[in-house]
Length: 207
Image (cartoon, rainbow, N blue to C red; front, top):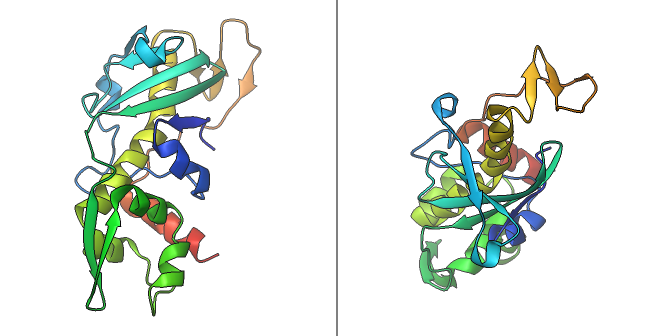
């Protein structure tokens, strides 16, 4: 499981979601080319006083990463910079009927799909596929998935910063901190593609 990952807004969604999601249709990995990223930090300001702000990662203009803690135990917070209006009313259709729902409510429904099953005639777990959400909600759904992806990505970027700065060392499947004992760990997995993540979501919702 990923380390604790909080978000200014998406933390509320992750609390009800079976697992964190990383997804963006146009970009199969938020952290593509991450091996060439040089990360650094600055002191958090404003409402993020007491946090450390991470800098230098891909798509930094879309979201900011803040963290607290040390290489072996830390938490992350993201600040969405996309200027999405969560109060925007989204118009969508299902079986010829038109619905109007606030974006923030749809984001909750995307995270916990119970509402769709209880309120839309004929909807089952097998209906609620990635394709169905994209066809029904389009960019609204993809915006949500992208934001959840940022939350999932944040701990990995912070961990990469600790590795780059020598605070966390990974050698031959062994993770070391300056004062740590040898402790075998699993090799870091390659970031999952959108297709893999969506399949996990669908499988989990059918359980």
